[in-house]
Image (cartoon, rainbow, N blue to C red; front, top):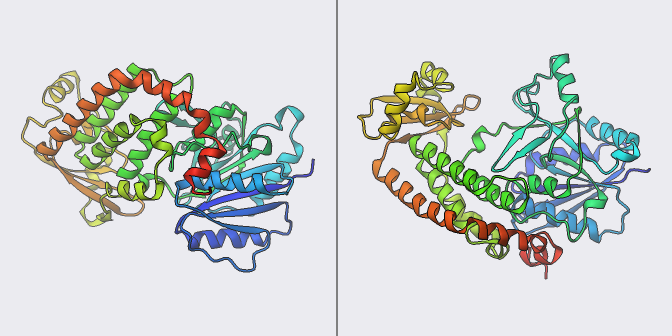
Length: 434
């Protein structure tokens, strides 16, 4: 089979990084693919690049960009065999495409309907393997092969032996053209979990290899209130759309655990984001499909608080302890819970924690917490505020009761509208193409 690839790159205000990647693609000695650059910011100018089409698009997030790219592929007269979905901010070696084409040409007949997943390595530590496919766990996902070391032959062998992924993230994912159809487009989730849903829906095997990999900045600094909103809302939606997800009791227990963690760590804007995610999930599928995505995202962005250079404020001794701290014994755990993680006791410590900290015990009896990202030196400070904590928990309790009574109905609503949500008809309206 002669391989012909449609490469779709969704971008939003990252022209410098995108330009570097396009120059690499343009320098390849063969043209077995055509590149579609979906510009969600409507500001890029491309000159003299063979095999690249620029498509100006409504800012509809990664999901909207990839959906628009799929629609462009469906309109094309080219006879593509595969589509590759790729982020604009990755780094990669040109050999990745040689290896991909070589793999596609060598697939056995029973493997030709498989997705080919690109592994993710950290850009700051390119030997650090983050993920080669992932498993769906209801409201969470589990990366496969996290933390393996590409410098160690045994770890590379482990990566190549990974199997059973439910999906591959769309920083680099090759999909056979048979799946690219007008009735099989992404969910309109704007940001995150669109790739999870697509993998679950199509139930295709995922093939990963250690030598088909890209480099990406670590996600620690991307853990913002906006990210929390989309991750929580979209995981609820995807969990509702598919069999085998978390049941109502598990969903409610997970949400309660998440809100407590954010309040106990004084990240009240994250708690607000979680509450808003639940509130919007309960508005249902037709509300989601009718959003003016760009304007709504601007509103969600207001939940974020700015980061700053905090490297000169870090208590490294506590930072190392705080990463892995646990209750010292059962009695301490009981006291901590009875005092609402120390809210009823006098605060006594200024703490330093990693940005990804998520255990209430890590913030026990803190006056303020400095959240720190070690590689960049960036972070933010949050202080104990009982009034904010009460307001967050009061709002959550109201939403929790709504979820108790309406969750089963919401699952039915999302499933009944699922076909429409992933259709050409919906996307043309959503992107204002009709």
